[in-house]
Length: 454
Image (cartoon, rainbow, N blue to C red; front, top):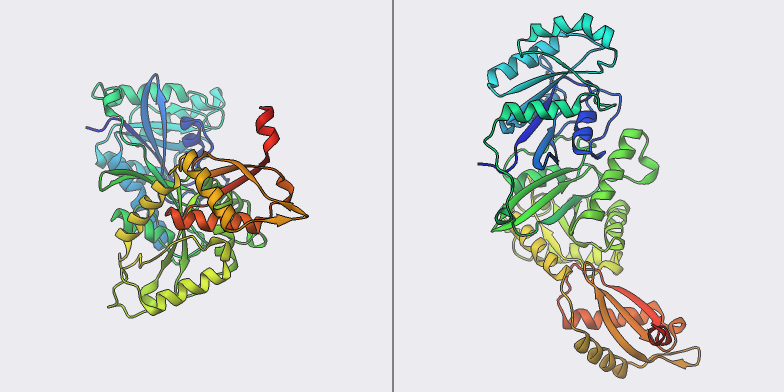
């Protein structure tokens, strides 16, 4: 039995499902715009009601009789959400009244035999609601409930009725139910490099909609799962474009959420197209992840188009080595980032990708003891003394102040003379001593007298 009940919000396009989703979880997670078809994939969020945690699923608008393959995938995603749900929140629009599309969705929900609440959104005017109320009974899903998702009217009553319909089968979470902390892995990249295909290949199911149309993914999709006993949260994001290419508000908000996903991830997987090679946008995305202090790796997708399909993606080849060397020459400041070559479409290289992600996640929080760090700093300073502006550098004290990312504070005699090239030398020495693969290292240089004053 699942610990958390699941509520799924379904309905035709543009009735306010994403607005209700944001209202229920108390955050602006789903993109809201007055345009049909903004939401496409299943979007999950968590909240609690009177101490009982629950999960909410936002879905794309369901339309029948459409031959568009993208709309067909939206319908499939919504049907999966219905299957997962313990109670369905069926949303219709009071301003539009009852439509044939509402009746078709209602037929689907009646066949599911799941507890369903009929919610009439945008019913802000009590007088108009009394005139409209009777027509929604024709859907055969019980008494319609007027709400306003944008203003929060009757939303608390929705949760009260939903939990009453679910019943008493749910138990509060106990301390014994707590699990190991999840590793958050964000899948980022420019549009149409295979991010959603990679998410589906990892999960072994069509979790995200895949299309050759760039920009199919809009919201950031959080998907928890367990791999070899380790809880993981996969974050699929919208494609990040060059600033000058972002033309619509919808694209702007999608990319803003993608960049926020980088900030909250432990590991950032930068997906690049192996057949097309690295671009300026790929380098900029990786730089954003490094500046945010995230562990990261290059996932070279579509490698089966570069080498014969019968080649083993798990083994090094001259073509792989040349490709990696070329990228490291173009992005010299990220030469510590590992490469994983894969094919999301064929499902190869996935296990190595996950193994590498968990390895660098552990390295991201690895701490070097203060005593050992100071001994090494003195040794490296002795091996390569540093003098600038007539002053010789002296390192009095070094400590790793924090991890995620590892941050080293140096107390020296003259901070103003320390050039980044010498910090680079110290970092290279540290990386030779410890396997900080895929992990950025931050340096803070302070005057020694500041420590004495403290």
